[in-house]
Amino acid sequence: MTNRVLEQKKKLRTKRKLRVRGNIFGVASKPRVSIFRSNRYLYAQAIDDQKGVTLASVDGKKLGVGNNKENAKEVAKKFAENLKKAGISEVIFDRNGYIYHGVVASFADALRENGITL
Image (cartoon, rainbow, N blue to C red; front, side, top):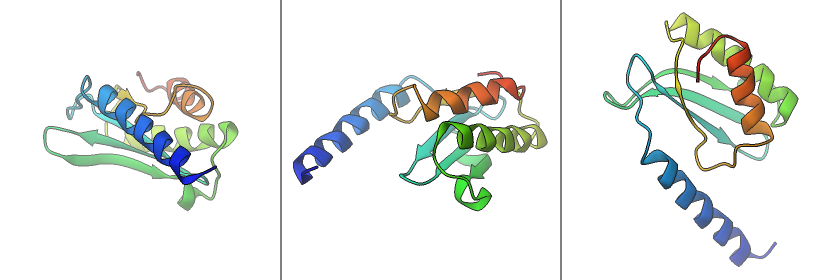
């Protein structure tokens, strides 16, 4: 792909991200779960927007798993464990500008399967 096409893709994702982010806000009792997909790994964190702190997080790179649907389920399982340790059972899902399908949808479904309410 050319540089111009990549810049356009980044611009469109940023617009989607800001549009989604304008409607959701996480608090300590119901934090915002933000995900990030790189080309290789998947990352997630639970954020309390009132205080601006991260309550729980998971790093696919440290777990040694890649960025596909099956690995997203493993990352979500570990993340659900971290959330439960922090005493969190209900969250607001922030897809971070990514379209809700594939890895993102698989991650969200796996969170639900592991007892976290979205």
